[in-house]
Amino acid sequence: MDGVGVFDDLVGQERAARTLRRAADGAAELLAGGAGTGMTHAWLFTGPPGSGREEAARAFAAALFCPDRGCGHCDMCHQVMIGSHPDLETVRPQGLSYGIKDTRQLILRAAGAPTLGRWRVVLFEDADRATEGASNALLKAIEEPPPRTVWLLCAPSPDDMMITIRSRCRVVTLVTPTAAAVAHVLATRENVPPDMAAFAARAAQGHLDRARRLAMDAEARGRREAVLSIPASLTGVGECVTAAERLVKTAEDEAAAVTSELNESEITELRKVYGEGSTGKGLSRGLIRGGAGALKELEDRQKSRATRTKRDVIDAALLDLVAFYRDVLSVQFGAAVELANEDRRADLETVARSSTPEDTLRRIDAIMLCRRRLAANVNPQMAVEAMTLSLRKP
Image (cartoon, rainbow, N blue to C red):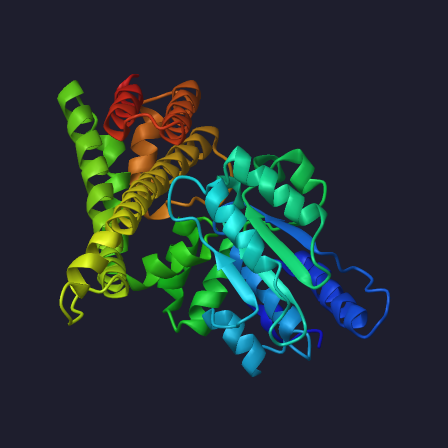
């Protein structure tokens, strides 16, 4: 099995792949009545954005279900990769948090016996969004799991999870892939021209999905250009306010584009469930009235998802700005490092000449403060305006 299969898709994660391969071997040994060396019932996948936490967890799930421990070609592996395996429960919190009600329902589903007789796996993406109550409920489930249930939790850092949860999980730490590794994947798997692959990998700073979007979507490249033009545009207070408005408006538009089609399909499906379009005297009206509460709950979830998406878009833009000023700092110190924004070398050198390294560090701090404010639910327009004003100051 070594050298082939689902783990080969984990770009730049050779160490994590070795750990997961050994665990998959242990899981097969456990099913056969052995000791199950290296296998445990709870895992925590951590790593920076773009490192592939969810991809690693999904590959491990495939290896647990696959008779060949993750061949990548069988029906079991295919079902996991497209999300249709009956024993795989994938949780993707779409709002700002994941509450105790949803967690309790999840725990009940996870307690069922495997349909196909091997494992029942819960893949919990963004598990750090679980509320305190939800985390406590999750802790109890992890402490006393059914014998064939495996929990795969994903979070940016172990510190983002309750200490009692992470102490009961085996932690798999993923790293940011190198630009060269990402460029190789784009060129060999996506047939992206080498120059474009190199640019996208460098600009995405090791984030494979973002690199893929930059390489294959002209609109994504245009949004990046708009963000990176902000530093040069901050010539006055009015320009700072305008730049903030534009960034927030772009995030709102992108969030609406991402969520609107999904919202409509969810509402249509819910109305069908509650009888819209049904025939029979009094049937449709009664069922629709009975579904009013469910419709309101769905609309609240959709609103929360839109807010989350908007903040995620703004956060991605802020990380682009951090990368820009980090490159400015590298130019100021004459560091012999690869620049994420080499394609904007002239802008970097202009800002580097007109400011000091202390100014650059202060600007990076201002961007990171904006990220913390957004995470604390500060109004996005106010938070971004405060940031742009700080970026303008000499």
